[in-house]
Structures are given as structure tokens and as C-alpha cells.
Length: 583
Ligand code: SF4
Image 1 (tube, rainbow, N blue to C red):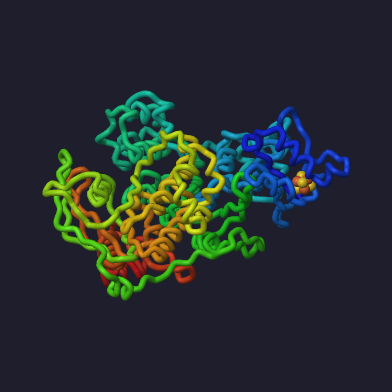
Image 2: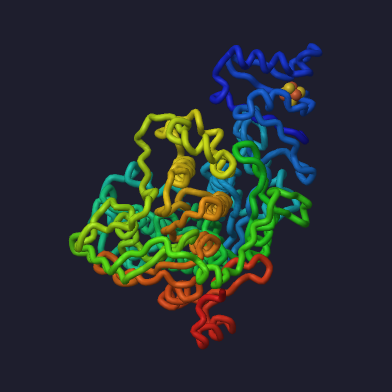
């Protein structure tokens, strides 16, 4: 068993002279052995020979990682993508009758793990010459619950249905109408029922190329439900969906698990994950280097352990700091000074109309914006940003505004370091370091992934000289940990620069963590939107949750908000008192 792994990304180490120089620094090579060696143009490290001095990793920190593995790992990886490449240790266990959630940062092996369970990827048990056969996999997991699962696989008793993460790829893979895709996969003959359940009835005759991100997500979920399977795997269901749709799908997934059906979900929205999962596997390790699937924990304990950053039973600390939620003080809001206010506004956009009451923003204040999709949140923010005009007249807030739109422009071939010049000069500690942007500086904007582009756009918006910062869906494409880092970064900038911010988002936990007050959008999507507030957190959340007919309490350990089970004692008690949100 290798207790140390080396990861070398040769795509980030193109200069041959630099590679040779790094090789010459290795103390093992200097003694005459071949610890660092070339195969063609590529540089490799012989892991058993490496003494872990870290000299090479210091010389090329973006390309080389030398990692001492946790003591708890006693076996070789279940899968490794190649010599000096990403390694995954252990696998999640599907449990019949339960929804098992996978929780961890991106690049830690969640997608690799579920691709193995779904049979899309054959594990190699670190043998790069050949994939493992089913007998070898059963032997590898002997004496564990995974052995029983793979014995069922051997007997042909497992049939999987898999909803992929990137629903925006569906139009590239399927040409036709929504109904045609559903008919193709309808093994259960429940097309009409599922179309209704996931609100697809009105768009059945639309071409898939012309439907929105939210519609694509609901289509992908419905298609997965229509397949006859006994292991259902959902890789992120919340992207592009509002809170109402998130809860509706979470509830459907919860009800899918029965004694003959196991469900696995990957999710970064902790409220949705908490709502649908019975058990949690935490995945930890080092991004793009290695990932470990921890043992199963009950959901409450699993999410709290993740926020703690410490696996007690395994004695592994995977994050330096704990994440804790504060109970908001109403006094702070009352003491704040007025920054600006807006009058009653109306705006007609085709068949849709938006109207606002008068509202105000105080200095150093963080206001969250909640509401369904198609209810006018983005239009309202664009009016404050001066991008569109209200029907009445120009809206002059008499302040400087910095705006991050919902859809980010990824076409530019400018380097990140050029785009973020000001942020690099002024906010290295506040923005560049916590948002982990250093490694992106030499990339072009059009080379960035969705999550990387989001971090760059947030840094750019927060670095501009402004009194009011408007952020439209900053949590999109970010993993659970980065969402919490972003909310911390926003809070620090607000405090330090005495600016204010308005944040539109659908992740309730993210908004709860960040916001001092809430603006609530009511009405009917695509028909009429009414802006109410800003309210204090309790009043704002109460008005939203009452419409969703759910109640929330605070977890007694982490203080994070949790949805009460429908008709539980707490749920009934809070509904009677009309306290839907427990501040
Ligand atoms: Fe050589 Fe290993 Fe030290 Fe790198 S960490 S310089 S490969 S001994």
C-alpha cells in the first residue's frame, strides 16, 4: 500500500527545460536513482521511491502535488486514472429503501464513484494495464456491505437509471421534441403522470433545443424516473431550479426509495440534500489529486460533520475551520444608516408585469432576494443596475453600482490576470486568495469551467469601486464549500468597505448564512411579479415558507436551518404559531 501519492499534471508543465530542471532538483535523482523520470515528453514520479521532500511540488505548485495519505487508508485505490493521476479510495454503498447522499467539494471523485456504481466506468484497482473484472471487485470489498452490492451486480440483479450533472448537454445529444425523448425512455408507461409531476405538460411539443435550463433539468429528472431500475442515481438536481421546484423534486426522490429501490444523490444545496437523504457519505481528500469516500452517517450527523471539517471516528481533519451559522440580530438593521431607496416602480415586459413597493437599502447591509423563476428578480436587479428602465422614468439611485449578471459572458479570450487586474492589486487577501483564483490567472476567460468563471465574475464585481453590489445567482456552478466561502467573502467586503449588497439566489442555506434582510417576490411566474420588503429575516422567510407550506427549525449543533418533516410535532407546532421559520 502506497502511503504517499504523487500527482503530476503534464498539461500544466509544458516547458521541457523547466521539467528537466525540476528533475535535477530531486534528491533521489541526485543520488543516482530514477525517482523522477521521463516517458516521452512527460515527466513522472516513481511513488515508492519518492521520499516526500516536496522540492518538486514547491518548484511547480500548479502541476505537481506530493501528498501524504491519511493513515486510515489501508488499501490501494478502487480506481486510478493513470500513473501519477487522480485516485479514488472506496465507494459509496447503495442501500435499498434509503436515499444516500454524497457530500463533498468538486474534483474529489463524486462523479467517478457514481459512474462506477452505474457501470459507466470500469474500476481498475490501480492496475493501469486492465480494468478489474467483477470477481476481483468482489474480492476487493470482501467482508464489507459493498461486497453484497457487487454480488448482486454479478447476478445481473442491479439495473441503474442515471441523471447526469450537465443537463445542458442534452440538446447536443438528442435532436427532437420533449415528448419524443420521454417516449423513448418510458419503460414504466407513466409519461403523462411524470410530465404532470415535473411540470412539463405545457412544453411537451417544444423542441429540446428551445427549452430553458430549468425545463431541461426537470426533463432529465422525469426521464430518469420513467426508467425501470432498482438503483436511481441523480447527479445534482437543483441547478437552474427555484426553491419551490427544488423541494418538489427532492420530495419525489425521497418517495422513490423503497425496499426494492436504492437511490443515490449528489447535491450541493444542503437544504435540499438534508430534505431528501436518509444517509450521507462525506467525500474528502485533495481536489484533482485524491478522494476518499467516508463511512455512511445519518444525514443530520453527516452534514454537521461536514460543516465541522473533522471526521471523529476516522480521526481525519479535512478542513482547518468549522462552518457555523449565526442567529441574526435585528438590532444591527435598526441602527444602520440609509444608503438609498427606490420609489414604487412598474415594468411591463411582453405579457409579464412587475411592480414594486417603495423600498430602501441601508449602508453595510446584505439583502437576499428570494422568489420563483420567471417572477422578475433579474429584471428588478437590472433596473437597479441601470441596465433597463422602469415604465415611469429613469431610476436614479444616486449611488455607484457594481453588477454581476446571472448569465456570464464566457466568449472573451482575455487572460484572467488582465480582467482581474484591480482585484489582484487591491484585494489579494480579501478576494484572490479565498476564492482560489491564483491558479486561474494564466487561463483565458473562454477556457474556464462554469465554477471557475463564476468565481472570477464574483471577484470582478466585488473589486469594483461601488456603494451597492448586485449579485445575480452567485452560487450557481459552485460546490457546497465554495458557496460558503463566497458568502464569507461577500460579508467581509461589506464590512471592510462599508458597501451594501443585494444577492439573488435559490440556495436557501446560502442566503440564510449571508443575509441581514430579505426582499420577497410574490405573484405568478411569467404573468405578474410583486416585490415586497425588505423584511427582517424572520418575516421574509415566514412569508416564503408559508407559501411553500413548509416549516424550518435551526439545528441545535450547527444552527443551520433544516426543513421539518411534514406533520411532525415541530411542523404542526410551528404552523399553529405561524412561525414557519425559526430564527
Ligand atoms: Fe523527488 Fe519526491 Fe522530493 Fe519530488 S518529493 S523532489 S519526487 S523525492
